[in-house]
Length: 519
Image 1 (cartoon, rainbow, N blue to C red):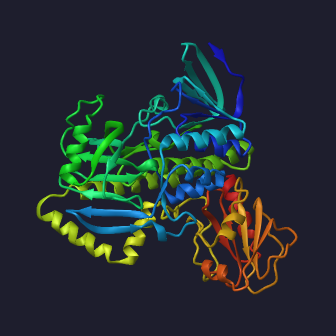
Image 2 (image 1 turned 180 degrees about the vertical axis):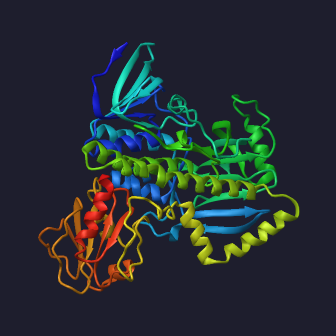
Image 3 (image 1 turned 135 degrees about the vertical axis):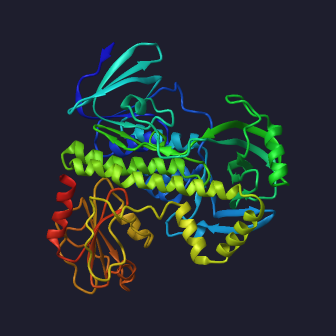
């Protein structure tokens, strides 16, 4: 057995899927020493999770990899929900409030490849063939026993651990916790990545509702289709066996029609239960992604929720490592993210139940869905929910709730998409907080204390001392969009959410916000 030298400020990330890779990249770009271990000898060659929603693309943009990832896939303008051959609702993702008004469909292999390349550019790498076989911790460190592919063991001495090792998380087991608060009867699915003759096009995703279970069809690169069918009864194929193409074709014939598989690239069956752990933080160990919560794949929320767990946690953990963040900041990871997964579980469970209704209730559902489909407000709200743009932390212990009169942006909510100039300026260096100052009709004020980056919105774009960027807004459209026509400050967290909205010159409010993070 070997023992790594004590590194109390380092972070060990367990799991090199998208969640673990996002955590590692976010930590590494903030100067944190990070190690990533994964029990697989090589990255998966299975496409697995393929939907990357707008909120995740915004996060990946801050990491500097969004455009590269988008180039690997297909962008979908929306989701059509179909029953009995009729489109009940079209969820318009092309009109959402984001710089990325679409869902990206790309194989998880591409997401992992792009993130791994980014991690290596940041000076870290994935150590493969290393499985966690024990974990202990005390007040100062975590000791993780890792078994290599050769059978040797190493004791990794780390300051902190991020457990992103999936639904069968070994780390979760060693913490003595388990998934709870969910439906543990299990839901069976059949998944296929196939070539097919079909009438679906490549502009929209589709969800076909059927009494035997919904079928999701997603267009992929090269004319492929990702098909996910829920099985109302137990699967024909025994657990662990590869399903036959004929089994999936029979489901498509019965529930959709007009989709003929010509070649199957990947077929698998799986079972999903719904639930999450009671706590995301266990001392110096944090659970993220499927290690913390599992739910139905309907809606494509799983990988996205997990990657956003990682983004939420990483800036807080980096602040704690550097001495700028305290225990309240670390505790806020659970406080903010646990309710989000609970809502995702409820949302995906409701979609799953709605997709399997039978008899007269099915007709009521279709009528109600058609009503929703005629309402721009409701379909746009559904689109924002699917894109995960409605995620917010209004009850977070680390936000400052007071705001100037008239402000329409709120602490704990995502900073809205105003225009590309604002987005680029705010997050050009998003490793720390950014202070956005709206001058209003007054002359440009001196930049306030606090914030790693200072951005000014003023009548003109001439440089102003103390500001990293100045955005011209001669018609005060930014001020109107934020409800700050008379001026004000918006303190943006590194994860794209608002920490505080303040009046011009409110230095005490800024100091109070940062003091909260340090407790």
